[in-house]
Every structure is written in structure tokens, then in C-alpha cells.
Length: 143
Image (cartoon, rainbow, N blue to C red; front, side):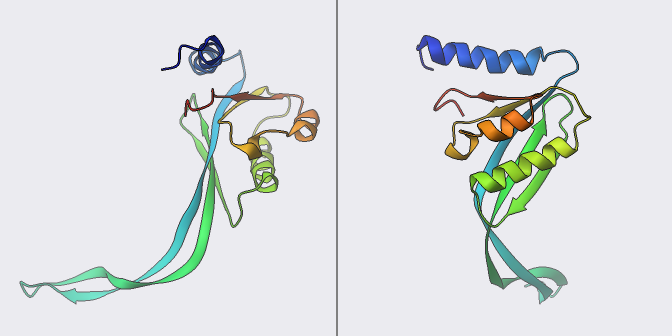
């Protein structure tokens, strides 16, 4: 673990949000899983060595490109909100954040914990339009 004071302070802030969130605030951890292969496998009936007929996936599959998964974990309850996208850019991230905000009661404070990936940064216009949302970034290399 880093002995850098800034690293320790950021880590303590994140841990504090998890353990002692502001009253009536929602704390969500948001991340994305890029480049998931979208495969289609067909099923069929196969005879095993013992002669038993079982339903299995066939070894052949069709490729349908890749998908990106955005996910928000509500820390207090474990509830998940997800969305798949073809691309993983700032526009898709903010579209996902709009989906997250559509689920939040109006006026409720939302603290979003993010890593330092570039699409999470420089979203000042979106944050200005959502004054009840606060982005908190994990220390670099802490994920």
C-alpha cells in the first residue's frame, strides 16, 4: 500500500462514505467492464460415453461483436443497476449516469465512487446540471 499522504486521505474519504454515508444520501460505486464478447451458442442433444442423452451447448458459436457493461452498486443494499452499450465513451457513461439518476428520488444527495478512468473525469457540465451528485475518485492504482 502507498505511504503517500494524498493516497491515504482519498482512501479514507472513500472508506468513510462506505461506512458512514451522509444522512439520507445514496452511495453508489460505478464501474464498467469493457469488451465482453457477445457470443451466441446453440444448444442441442448430445450422447455421452455412457449412452445418456443430455442437452448441452454445442461447441460452435456465432460472434456478435463486443459489449461494454456499466454497473452501479448501491453500497448500502447491494442493489445493482446495469446497462450494456456498444461503445465505452464519455457519452455512454453520462447516459448511464442519467439512468442511475432516473431511479433516485428528486433532491436526494448521491455520492458516486469512481476510479480514475478518463471518461469519469471532466464532466463538469453534467455535474452542474445535477447539483445533488458528487463524484469521488479512488486513488490512482487503488482499484
